[in-house]
Amino acid sequence: MRVRVLVRPKGGILDPQGEAVRSALPALGFEGVRSVRVGRLIELELESGAEVEAMCRRLLANPTTEEYEWEVVG
Image (cartoon, rainbow, N blue to C red; front, side, top):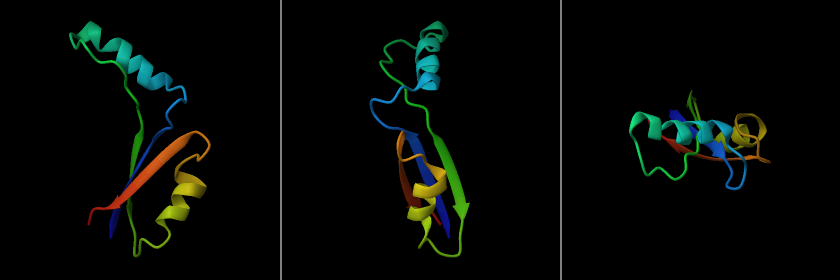
């Protein structure tokens, strides 16, 4: 099975990479963007999805500063 995990900063946590993207967009002609959050996408191929939640909590995301969601995609 294939699983996708989306990890991003929690609301209220500073996101310097997102802020850099937000501030660069007007220079490229993209106006009206109020905020940008930059995260990461992790794809896993697994025999079973039974331990995905534990993988996310223990390694793939920092539960103090990040939130995550995952889904089976194949």
